[in-house]
Length: 460
Image (cartoon, rainbow, N blue to C red; front, side, top):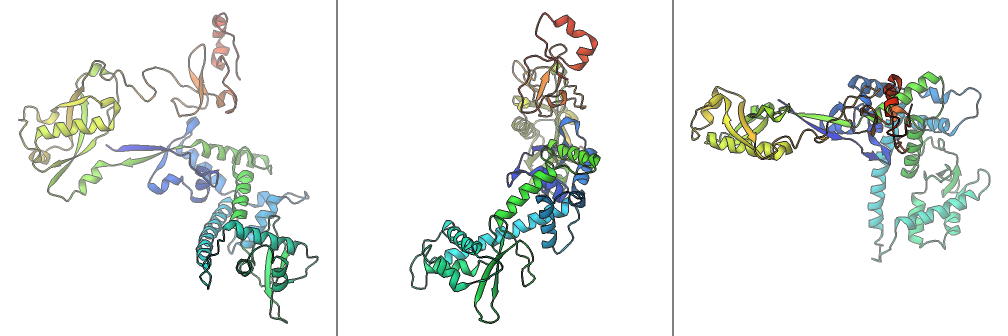
C-alpha cells in the first residue's frame, strides 16, 4: 500500500497567491515541482474541474482586453501593448504574458545582485578610501538626475558634463560618476525612460527622458525590478484575481474566467504518493532487511477504523521475530497518534513460530508481513477517531462537499448538518449569524417545531 502525504498550499510570492500564479504559468501547483499533485479541492472541486480551470484561465486571449471598441485606452491596454513590444516572441494569451513578466523579474533580480556586488567593489577607491555608499545613496542621486532631465523642455539632450554639474552638491564625485555610467535605461516613477547616446559631433554622452518605447538605437529598455513588481501586481489583480478582475466582453467569457480563478484559489490540498515497494526493490545492502509491514487489530469493537498503509521496516540481517514485533510496534507508534500505545503480538502468517526464529528465511515465502496487535490502555482507540475528534457530525453542502475541507462552515440549528458559509450566502469576511436554519429545514417546515427555542435568522 502507498502512503499519501498531504500539504496545504497557502504560499505567496511577490505578495500574490502563488497557487494561482504558478498554475497559470506552469500548469500545475508550486508543490508539483516536488511530486505533489491534486489531492482534494474545497467546495467539492474535482481534478477534472481543476485542470479545466487551469486551461481556461491560462489561454485567455489578450485580445479580449485590447479590444474595447471606441472607448479610451486604459492603463491595462497600454501595459499589455508595452510588454508585447518588449518581447521577442508573440504574447498571445495570459500564460505568455505572465511567463514573460516573471522571466524579466528573474533577470532583473540577477542584475540587481550583480549591481550590489559591483557596488561593494566600488566602495574601495583607488586610494584605498572606503566610500560608504548605500542603495539609498544611489537612489537619491538618480532621483536628482531625473528631476534635472524632467525640467528640460522638448526633445533636447543634456550633456554628461551639464547633468553632472547640476547635481554636483548631491553626492561625492565618485558616486556621481558611478550613477551616470548606468543611468541609461533607468525608468522614472511616471513611466519615462532615460535614453543615453553618444553625440556624433562632440563625442560626449548625452541624456534625455522619453516615453517608454523603443530607444534611438532600436533597443527597448527593460523596466526596473520595482516597475516589474508593480506591473505584475496590476496584471494579477486585473486579469487573474476573481474579486478584482476588470470588466471585458463578452460577459460569459469573463464569468467563466472568474469561476476558473475561484476554483484555483479554492484548491489548496495536494498529495504525494510514497511507495514502500519501490524502496524494497532498491535495497542492495545485504547487511539489512527491508520489508513492508501491515497491521491489524485484535479487538474489532474498537470501531470501523481504516487500516493504515503498510510501514517500511529496516532490520538487521539476523533479526528475529521478536525484533520484528518490537520494530513494528515502534514504527506505528511514531507515525500515528491513534497507535500511540499499540503493541504487536503475533505474525498472522507465522503463528506458533518461535520468537527466536530469524525473519530472513520467512521472507522467501510471504510478502508483506502482517502483524496483529492491540492498543493498550483504558480507552483504546475510542479516544481517537479522525482529525475532527470524537464528535460525530455530518457535512452535506449544496456545493457537493460531504466532509470537512478546511473551509469555514456553520451548522443548521434544526438538523445539525454543516454547510459552507460561502455556499449559504455569507461573505467570508462577515460574522457567522447567531442562529441559522438551512434551506432544507425551512422548506420542510421543521423550523416551526423549534421557534420557541431560538430566534431564527434564515440565510439564503
